[in-house]
Image 1 (cartoon, one colour):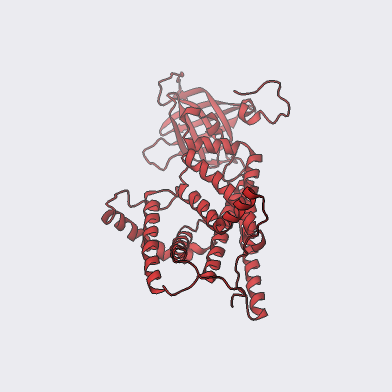
Image 2 (cartoon, one colour):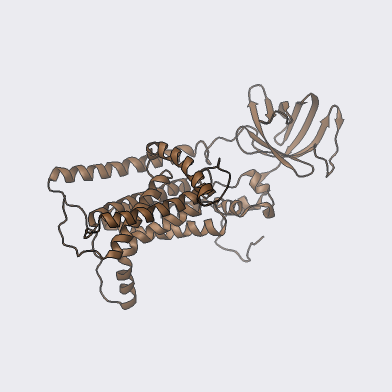
Amino acid sequence: MHSTSYLPSWSLAKKISFRFFFILLALFIFLNNNGAFLYVQHLFHFPTLWLHQIIPWFSANVLNYNYDFSIFTNGSGDTSYNYVLLFFIFLLAVFCSLIWSILDRKRKDYSKLYYWLIVLVRFYLAFTLMLYGFIKVVQLQFPQPSLSRLLQPLGTMSPMGLAWTFLGFSKGYNIFMGVIEILSLLLLFKRTMIIGAFLSLAASVHVMAINYFFDVPVKILSTALVVMCLFILAPYLTTILRFFLTYQPQQLSPLQIPVFKKRWQLIAFRSFKYLFIVWTIGLMITNAFTQQYTYGSLAPKPPLYGIFNVERYILNGKEILPHHADQNRWKQVVVDWKDYISIRTMDDNKVYFNTTVDVKKKQIEINSKNTESTQYKFKYAFTNDSTLVFKGLKNQDSLSVTLKKYNVKNITLTNRGFHWINEFPYNR
């Protein structure tokens, strides 16, 4: 494998910066795989466990920064652990690039290694954005607002909750965002790499802006994706700007690619590349479309799905009338998901419970993992299309609850629809 064209020697600054970014980006990608390269997390299982020991020690003894050392990477990608790990990787890249520069100071260029780094960054960037793109298209990342969310006062939402509600409301906008991110597929091919990088930059900046301005805890990853887009585009930006600003013809320098001495090597290389792409994308699509039947809009609704307002609450044969400050009497019941229920009491305190429903026996058990919390065991029945009655036990007390189902078609947000013509703005 050799280069077919002569390239001038790199400057000292270019060689040092390349060494730094090679180490920094490679470490970030493999330690923050984020599902881009399937099953890679298994290869880095033990290094990750070592880092779970090293990073807390480094934080406490070197940075003198103490946090809850039992918290690692979780649903938030911006934990203290993640930030300390990022700083650790940065310092490691600085140190290793200096050692590398001393030991390999006679090297003229890193053209071949640069090519493979660009390949790694392109594939990581493309697969990450495509993964998010597919789950947007089937509306898994931003699902339609749940019943509980629709009942939540706007002022009690977090910025992230507001963003998820806003983005989840529109299926069309989800598809639009998803398609733009899926177009990062163009990064995977040499001829379309530049346009793919620009589209990926637009998608990544959009995500980064949402994460920053709505306080979504994925700021590290989204910022890294923007940096990677700029890293790919860096050698071409001057030429592109000169084209737009001077109106003079310009030519982009092609990416120096390896040339194989034997034909079978080229065939094997290309075959592996395309098989890897097809396999990865195929699994992403399969997982996304399968999960929408489990977690998405196509998942079956629970048998008691709906919003129910409490009309009567009879405890031990005595009807408890609604009083605003009552901490025990139910006010509203919401059934959004299978095996879960939320109960709002008269003082507007909302508690989530686990449920077990036996449709054949018309029985429901409502309980919590906390053994000291209230346990309910009911028989249930619909007396008509909109009235549901629970009869059974609250711990050892008898309880009968009559609930009236709320018509969700009365919720403006989900039933306004699309209108080409608006004589007046419908801004409520």
